[in-house]
Amino acid sequence: MHGNESAENYLETILILSQRLPVVRSVDIATELDFKKSSVSVAMKKLRESGHIIVSPEGYITLTESGRKIADCIYERHTLLSSWLTRLGVDPKVAAEDACRIEHVISAESFEAIKRHIK
Image (cartoon, rainbow, N blue to C red; front, side, top):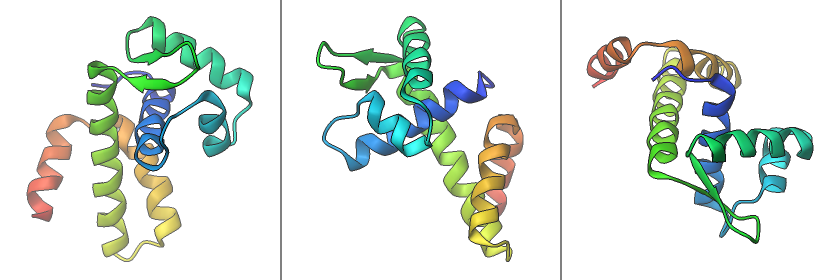
């Protein structure tokens, strides 16, 4: 699953926000990512058209099954890689930034091997 890195980041952000907030709106995503609302609106339209999110008439954003699957995968990669790098002695901020880059390009095979090695 190596889709569009930007789309994956948006889906991951929606997942994270949905765990913290009662509802997720475009403005919440823009605030979280420090993006312009117009940029987020364009991205939400693309995600809606690709079937990864549903936007209610009130503007509430929900992940579809396919969107949730991608978001879960990226979030798992991020959290595992970030914590692993931190345990290896990498500064937590650097580890999180590196994990954010790695999570989009690592193959499923390599990620599974890292998971097995860590456990």
